[in-house]
Length: 232
Image (cartoon, rainbow, N blue to C red; front, top):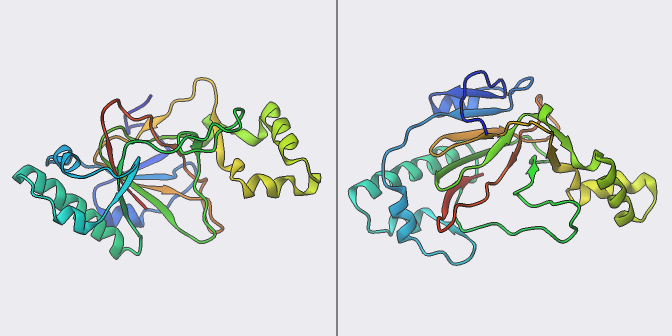
């Protein structure tokens, strides 16, 4: 697992929100990182929030209602500011308190949950933004270090059996059920962990995209620790 930004041609590191949103993706570079060393007590915010399900969306009003220490208030202001910056940019940020995501183990031979390496797809031009304030952080991986799962012969054969329809409709079937969005790391692949506190913008598969979409996955959560994640 790699954690150094140097010599990683997949990532562009910037020092402001303006640079984060205005740096164009190109070639193999499909992830931009506003690198930050955040202060404040984000764990206190988690301890004051109520987890209603495995995933609870936290609104700005929920945050403002918390009675926090000075350090907790610093953390809250950082989150609120990030949410405002993204909203002003036209995004729809969602702050999630996470115990875990739902697992997809129904088929056995292929997984399509967020713990599987995947890309995001959109019919319109957009980007994915994410920041982990506390807990385990997501991974990304270079496109040349993965193989599309639907191209792996044994998986493709199983999917054809599952499809059980005309060959000309098979590719549409793969897209309809999102099988084509998922990837398998190659031997000796080196994922990159996004770390805590940095705000990331990663490339999405859409019609105007000039770069390859960024392959990423959610982390396996740490025992007895919730994640606090901003995503849009």
